[in-house]
Image (cartoon, rainbow, N blue to C red):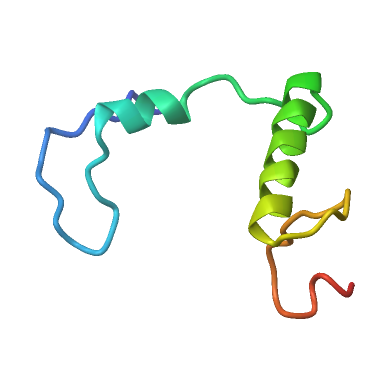
Length: 74
């Protein structure tokens, strides 16, 4: 239906969209890990351990919640 979109190279200097470094494009096109993947679970456990150090707690379930101020309560 539509051909491939292949615009010419331009330097984009507005608030967005902007040019992206090839290294970033490669990273963004890497395979995704699912939330239940054993490797992802390992990353989460490592991250939670680092948060315990930052927040000086021994609570096993220390993790960050992205959202409004009430998100952690809900």
